[in-house]
Amino acid sequence: MVDAGPILQVLLASGSESGGNPLLEIHPGLIIWTIVIFAILALVLGKFAWKPILNALKQREESIRESLDKADKIAAEAERAMAEQKTELNKHRQEMTEALRRTREEAEKGAQELLEKARAEAAETAERARRQVEEERNRAIEQIRNEAVDLAMAAASHLLKKTLDSDDHRKIVSDYLKNLPDNLQKH
Image 1: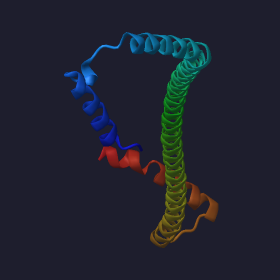
Image 2: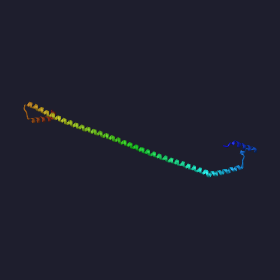
Image 3: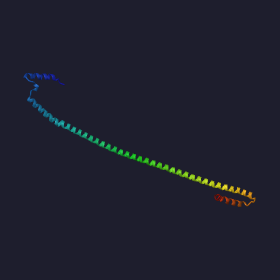
């Protein structure tokens, strides 16, 4: 860097001889050359520097615009994809809810069927047991009748001291016992 101190001292010293400040004096030759140099510099810069700079700025602006457009497109695509995912997720949730409902209904239906089957089997078992009890009761009654006939025959033959044939005795006592409920109601 150039030290401006000595240059300023020289200019101030030369101006002090003419009586004014040399920096504030107007020099027409200097003004013309400054304007000519400025015009040449403006033309050279305009032709060689400004157009490339402006072109570079335009390219940069277009690049930024394209990047923003791409970013907007990507954001829109992401938003659309998220909406699709959300729709798909809701669809899967509904399917799962429906599957759970169907499974619950099937389980309840299966439990109801098992319960009714168990009830039917219990009723069938109870009916079988009732029939067995009825058969056993009928057999017991028949056995009691047979024993009662035998006892009655023994008692009757003892009382009458007369024996009828065994089949006749049985027939008489059997008829009497069959009519016994009727005979009891009459009394």
